[in-house]
Length: 285
Image: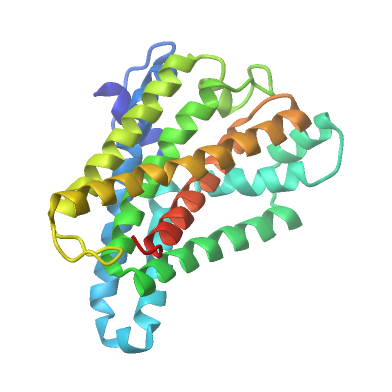
């Protein structure tokens, strides 16, 4: 439980204002709590989105309520995470697209100021998040959008655990990424991913048993629950592939990963997972 609190304090802005006694390697051992940390974030995100959607139900006829609720849902995500991963994504855009030497790229990414590429990256990241959430609510229903907002952070944290376990450290012991990189085994990374997949599978299964309406199914029959659960697992595939491609691209330029690029990888995984859910949700089954 101490490691879970440590992960929540590190990755979220949940007001856990008490000191946790740390031992060497606690951050690395806290990897097993990545999926649960993502679940806390997902509960917050989905809750805010659905609450605002209910409050704005008078605007649903014009879809304005859905778009406003989507904006508030994404704003809530930035609030609980402190935009930590988004900041890493912006820094990664500035550094990786600077067309400089490896050393200069790392210096740019360490700079707290946001450049042009970083600003553009933030805009596109937020627009994609808002657009995908709104598209899900319009085309597959508010419940589908809420389910995605709940599970996408779980998937992103789980995939992130796998990626950092197979990555080298570009900064050779410096930076926040070094709290995890090089200190986590591949077995731990695989366990993190498996735990996240089981958690998402369970959440999709619960949604199915609750009579979640999706891809033309209107009841809670066994095969419908199974299909919905399989869709949840299938969404992991493109998220993992996108992260592996990103990791390989970063390692060719920097020789390893950093805390910023891990944050960027988390953003990519979450967006790709959501996009996959939108695509699979529109497929006739």
